[in-house]
Length: 131
Image (tube, rainbow, N blue to C red):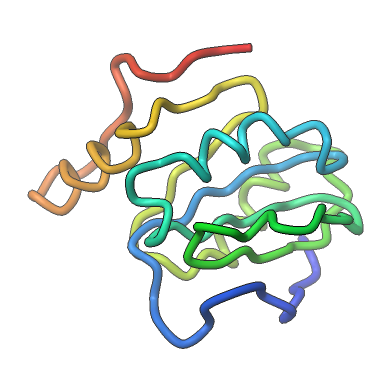
């Protein structure tokens, strides 16, 4: 499992509405997905959980987001890396992001709305462009 990194960036006093977990081998691998997550209509309520080996983040990566958490993990197995991120997520709702999928700006708000309304699970039918 991953090693917890308590150096969360941004808001640590309030609970985010949703956490987006993204496993990467280097920040550059997930940069386009992170940009798409930062453009979400609920970005200010979104915790980004980045899972990977000792990640170096560019300045401003947390801008517009509720918070960013780093989970140190070797990412040999994608499922293990994602599980490590999910365990560290602070929000009651978790979106498992992928480096090749860029959700359109209302995507996570629509998913959160469906779950808030009582759905047991939700997934986008459309609205995610792939690289």
